[in-house]
Image (tube, rainbow, N blue to C red; front, side, top):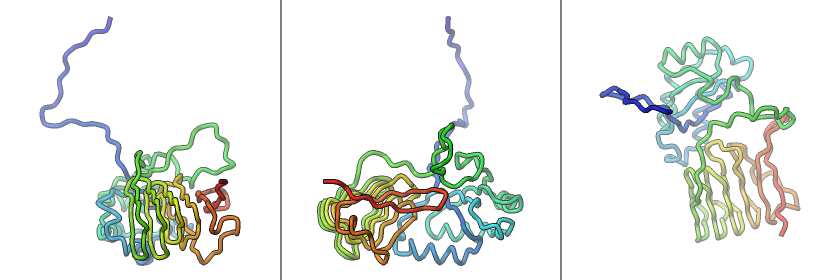
Length: 256
């Protein structure tokens, strides 16, 4: 029969397993000036977009001629700190890069990204013998931010960690941002950014799809690239598709 016996534990500390919501910053260059400029381009008008989020820098996507190039981790940390991000770890760099990361005091591991190697997103044609490891993204809990009023030009709304539902028109010059899905039950004429923290399963829905820009998990398409007649001005959805040829935004009409 089972027997329960008293145990002892330290009086000054406890060690527990923890689930950490990490953002993965997948670098495509070691040029920190170029990175700084592009971060300003995409987040310069959103000073509160990040709020002390922990970051692991993923070096698996560096081009071949930069895979052995040194990376200035102190400068990278300062660059991210200015944007309210906290650099915690590095992953999948060269031996020299990982040694420099550890010397700076970062954790150096690929396990932190929930994988053993450093693949791109799972390929559509790959055999599905084992389920793919989940992407290291912030979980999107149930519930949504709901807006009942029109979103006017110059206005910006961000649903942190949630879906965003808009029951009125989104005018040109307005911007919607959500870590989850975006639903617009009216005309979408402004910008819609779903999966803002890297959730590639996010979607965008609109009763009238006429956007200036749509983006899912950082993959975007601007209004300068005309949409097909079957989608423009119609009820439609947007999803992100990743395969051997790269990332694509897929627009689908929604049947009435």
